[in-house]
Image (cartoon, rainbow, N blue to C red; front, side, top):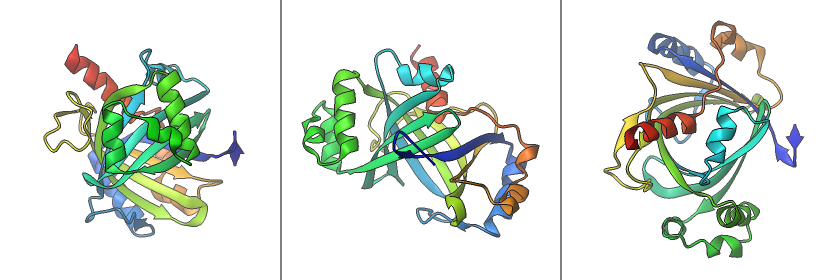
Length: 235
């Protein structure tokens, strides 16, 4: 399915308790394989720097359930600069779309000191659009989101089931490469986030496997959770 020339996916989110997580991961692991980014059975580390404007439009739109919204982020894996992704995640009612482009460490460092001309000179459409949103939309770094992701994949309908754990907000810096980044837990209680993503349909055996009907779907945003934690910390 496409909208505005973007490939759309279903994305379902749930809070789950530790005992539910342990039971689900055992069942899922029997029929789906771990994402290739995984380091051991616990998954891999994700750290993202999100951008918003001075009016915090991305935060406002999410909290108010705007039909169409978008967020930019820069994401790294396992605390390494080997892969740095500029991503734009768009929401169209119940569907999501994600676009990405690769950045070098030098380009990331340039962005952090306000030098973005290279984006305009890039042949990549996403980079150029990010440049215009930085310039005209007054985007700026907003918050660092940090967590462990345990991801399982199934090829039919490009199904991804992820368990996001240890969600934390960076509260004093926007440097995603800072080994001493100060972070605070951003979910109340011992809970994980279950996400189920797929294209056209979710195979019946996976529905049965994860028993979606027994969980309450939530409008969870890791960006919002971490931004709210940051606001509490900074007053």
